[in-house]
Every structure is written in C-alpha cells, then in structure tokens.
Length: 400
Ligand SMILES: [Zn+2]
Image 1 (spheres, rainbow, N blue to C red):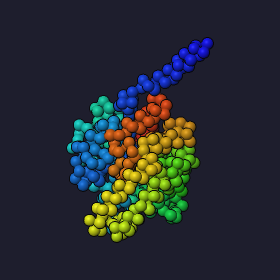
Image 2: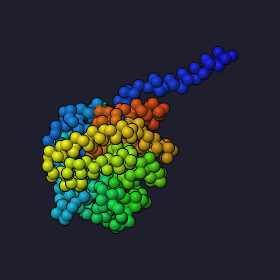
Image 3: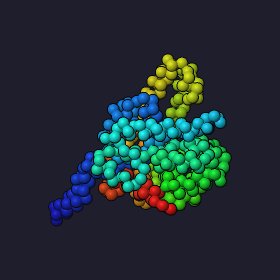
Image 4: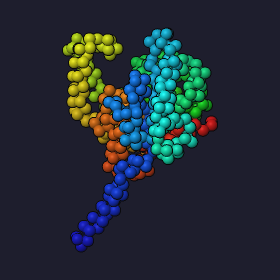
C-alpha cells in the first residue's frame, strides 16, 4: 500500500512538474512578443555611438535582438527647463531626438521598423525586426501648446509622460515636495483629453499622486505607468501605491516595472545617496550632480571609481537582482488579481546601474526564466512580456 501511495505521489509530481520542465525558456521567450516600455538610448546615438554594433551601454541593436525585444519605446527626453529660454527650446530639443530615432531606423532598415499603429505589429515577427515606438519623456516638450502635441503625434509619438522630476506648467510631478496645481490644472485636463482624442498613450510615470488621480478620473482610455515600481515593496515617490495599481487595473491600463535598483529598493536609493555625499566630501567635490560635472576631472574619476565599487557592494547587500524585478511584477499580479496589468519598463540607458542578472537588453530572457521558475504559465508570461501593452496600444489607437 505504501509503495502504491508513493508511486501515486511520484506520478502526481510528474504530472504537475512536467509542463514547466518541458517548456523551453528560450523557445517561449522567442515566440512571445516582448515589449520594453521605456529606454533612454537615443541620447547615446546622438552622441555619436553606433547602436548597430555591440556597445558598452544597455541598449543597442545586437542586444535588442539577443534579448528577443520585439518592441522598444525610445523616449525622447525633455528635461525640466531651468529658465524661459530653455522652456522655449523644449520642443526643438525633442525634435532633434525624434530626428535621431528616424535616422537610427533608416540606417538599420533590416533590423528596425518605426511603429505608429497597432496594424504594424504583426509584421515585426514575420520580418524579424524590432519595432521602435517614439515616446516623449516630459510634457515640457509641448511648450504649453496643443498644436505642438498634435504635431508630435503626426511625427509618430505614441506615448508621453506628462512630467519629469518636477512639474510642468500644468501637471504636478512626483519629485515636487508640494503640489502647485493639486494635480492637473485646466490646461492639463485639455492635454489629457487631446491625448485621448489623438490616440497617444498617457504615461503617468513621474507624475504626482494627485496628478495620477486626476488623469485616471478624466482619461477615457487606458493609461500606462511605463517605468515605475511598487511602493508597497519600496517606498519611493516614483513608485505606485496598491490603490493606484488597483485603479490602473480598473482603467484597463498597466505598469511597466522599472529596473532602477533605487526604485526596486528605496533603502538602496537612500544609502547610495548618502554614499554620494560622503564621497563628494572625501574628494572635495560639490554635492550637486550638475555642479560636480564641471569639477576637476581627476577628482571626478576617483569619485566615480569608488562610487562604482561601492554601488556593486550595495547591490549585493540588498540583493538587487532579476528576482527582485520579478517580485515587483508578482506584487502587481497579487494586488490586481491577474497578470493583465503589468509589463516591462527597463529604463535602460537612463539608469546608472542595473540589477544583477539584468545588465542590459540581452538579459531580458532572465525574466522569462524566473517567471517560469515561479510557476507562471505561458499565457501569463506572454501577457507580462508584451501582450498587455499591445492590448493597450490597440485600444488607445482606436477611435473614441
Ligand atoms: Zn524616467
């Protein structure tokens, strides 16, 4: 009897374990549509780095192909203007980056393709190309003019974060210590409505909580937090609370999990911050990053060297790795009750350091591996890797 019992146990174990063991990680990853909702690689291209070759950075064409990335959002960054002159240069600044994205694609036609509508998605796998979606990071880019927003749409921009670290003239940002408008002002409401009408995805990463709630109440289309993490796991203003995750799910939107170690673990963020101040003092450098850039290059080199070594130590200490990224993915699934509202928003080339096991775009299959290991099935993994974002892209692009 005992023998029969154990045979039965082994059989049950075999039956349960078999589908996961049989599922090949690389095959599953290759067949899945993989979308990364945010990277900052275009500034490297504009600095003259050839992204068609293997580079030192996080994103280049060989790495995108190795990582099986089918759609990569290239964010064109408009920083918060420091004065009126800079304010009036925001659109031009972004236009130059959009030109960069076009030139990058034109120079690598066999590998890249501009994606502006959902209908183009099917061809990507057929033609073995990575789709590039143009995004804007920082609503300063529209220079408070809906005509410019429409022009950016015509140029192919399909997703835009309303703010960056600090507020625009119409939306509060998560980095603001106090709110200026209590979320969106009247013009901010118009921006949201116009983005809905055009079919441009509203990106709430970087916005203030109050702005998030205003957008969720006003938007008639699903919204996206393209590169943020979960606040319940890491108390950082760039991350979303459980209430916000639930509201996103109700709205049919999603969050792309950011790979920034400091968002994944706020303690790491705080300790690295203290470390930077300590090292700046040690090498007689200014505390502010902008000031530091102009300082003595020799001192700066020593500062950077030590910061790098110490950061690696902190990553080990706080176990900042691919598992932690999947913990954040899993948290969204637990809070919302399904795998329909989460995806990837690496922030590659915008983050100074990466989790262990996710060093660049080529390492993205490690997420698939970890999800499989945790028992997620093919359907859920495919949703997380890209299908969720495709669902939203399709819905936002459909007429109101
Ligand atoms: Zn960002």
